[in-house]
Image (cartoon, rainbow, N blue to C red; front, side, top):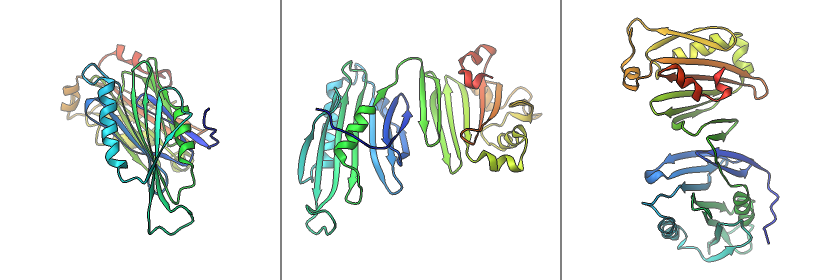
Length: 306
């Protein structure tokens, strides 16, 4: 029998997977580790609530070896638990254990003195295409039921297939071809920047919140976006000029008539620069695509190709 869950959730998507998480949680951090492991941390307003790691196994790292490694690693985290309970009713491929931690000196609303609950969960895809490890934290002050939480996470888990991947977090969401790999991010209040790489080509993508406030002082979006990217230190070869209808033009700086050393090292000396106003989300979206030749433009999805 499946666990009944009634939790207000939102979806995040990262590096080929989609997860349903409580609506007030969001991405707290990420790492790309050795052996192709991706790790994310999801947090509420106070602390990290969810840790997720996943890997697509290879012949060098078979599934059985992965499960054994993570069972050993998680055992170190839960060794001090006072009680363990298996979680039943999860979808195929999922297994989970609830760990209870009691504090003899604990004084609070909990009659049984439980100061922390932790869930360790594993997902082994029936096709052996992905392995997922989940660590869920529920403190004494948290109101969620840990078994319902892990059930909701397991029910909403999706491994993305096909040639495109969705990226969704905070107030942004978009799709890119799978060939574009995330290189770096810079998340700040009101500004989210993500840099993707396809071989040596580079796609810089910004989402700015509160578009109405920005455009109140800069009525022309193209002028504001041009000023912003001209001040961006990661683009040294060209200088940008505002066009119309979301187009930003560029030309070579006199100091670099054939290209800056970074451009020459990449072999990418061409640029497609655009901006748009997403009125529904009250966002400004700006992107710079650094590429080699005209055929590279075919790699851009429709929402970036205009």
